[in-house]
Length: 277
Image 1 (tube, rainbow, N blue to C red):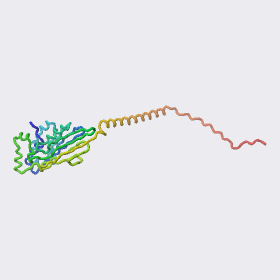
Image 2 (cartoon, rainbow, N blue to C red; image 1 turned 90 degrees about the horizontal axis):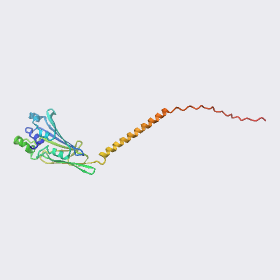
Image 3 (cartoon, rainbow, N blue to C red; image 1 turned 60 degrees about the vertical axis):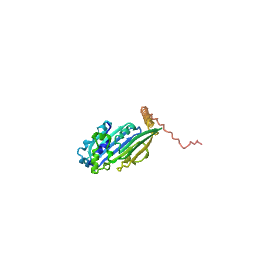
Image 4 (cartoon, one colour; image 1 turned 180 degrees about the vertical axis):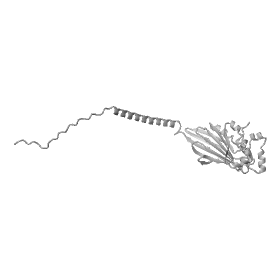
């Protein structure tokens, strides 16, 4: 059975959310070895929770857990809202790519994500490519697995009847934290990383970021050099202490010199003897 995606599950809960907000943040963090984490934060506002009693219990993520995702929540925040935290630790860019493609369906909003790593000599190049786009409006919140699970997509017909567009109620923010210096980017650089926001009008936001990190001045040899430097400094300090100890010990063992008796000086007369005439 295909894996149920996260975003369509959230979209299915937007049936009555014409004036509510669902904010989704996706953080992709990787180091120069290609390992890292994917963190997804889903914030559902208090109005949505009030309109849909039992909303927390309707979030079924068993298949994501079976795929390796760690789930925390949903927990109550912001005076009645709900927050769901998901984390996926990965060991390689290929594993990260598979996990990123589990977040949304074929209609977006995160399309064709791919994390790549390449080593050129002592330089590690890391790139993240994707597209943020809601394809087909309401259809962005459906996928074959969800349709198969419930037989159809009844929330779409109801939403159309009520004039609700979930794409205006959902925001998706993607943030990348890649190692090294940024060489190319289509996002906004900030302290938190490189940031992209999904358009709500169906247009595409191209996600491209590439970084390069040089290991010439880092890695094993710098670590070894630092260790050797500390060892040499420690050795010199130890030698200095030993020299001081030996010097003080010899001074304590040496007998004091006896004071020489001072011979009184003979004062010469300034008057010379005159022979008798």
